[in-house]
Length: 353
Ligand SMILES: C[S@@+](CC[C@H](N)C(=O)[O-])C[C@H]1O[C@@H](n2cnc3c(N)ncnc32)[C@H](O)[C@@H]1O
Image: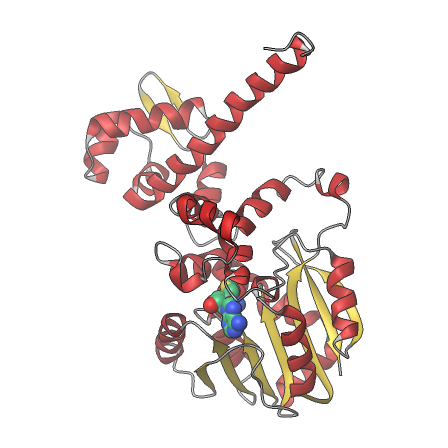
């Protein structure tokens, strides 16, 4: 080892890395707790190892080791052999509240499954489209937004623009691009029965889920089409929405131009997307920046870069200034940029034709 090394700096970074590795393994434990139902069992009532293993139908020795990680990681409390998940922690890990972010652990654990393929993409270029990513990617993407849409979509996200709400209430031709499993799309159709809504996504599996949910909700004013987000009919729409998708696209600017062309004069585009500060030092102040760059590499960016050599690929840390510039370049007038309730990582951009 070189004599020039600053030993204090080396030691402090080595210690920090232990904490980093610990947190990384805690992510896997959180995901295992969700997959096995163990976290849910613990959230219902405290218990001993034997009691929790019995209630969850799991092997006690694994449960004991998992609890060791969860206690030393500060997730679970223990006293005299009884383990407790504090209710505030339970709210962040189980249930229907938008505070439940356990899908993030699933996304990170998912990304780790294809590191070999990703390493090859780093060398050769290209990427892994969502449809080819491991696990139940449709269910995962749905789980990441569902509770937020239930809580905020109609009363907060759409409500940022009175002209948009009026158009929807009066009856608009609406398209939700990159709709995934369609929960946001279905909620719009449900809230605005005079409007006619189409959800487009290039993943047919996602649209099967979207259609099934629409049927279960008894909706008759929504339909789904497998299509690329850039293939919209010109001048046929009053409202376009894009939730958490433009930064995933291979050719985001081409799609923004297509959306601008698809809107009738006066039409509104509601874009829910990345809004990072431009400067890396400013990004370093954000507690989620590292996580979002990682999720970008293993999901969003690699999906975008799967789209050919000329793919651009923004990723979820794309700066707000870049998004605004791209909207104007696509032919929109920017009518407003608003914070997203329940999601400080993104913004709501209202753009008009
Ligand atoms: C992060 S998900 C968001 C899904 C949904 N909007 C939501 O908020 O739950 C991104 C979606 O964009 C879709 N997508 C990616 N590239 C696309 C393209 N070129 N055309 C249409 N959909 C695309 C993916 O299949 C995926 O369903």
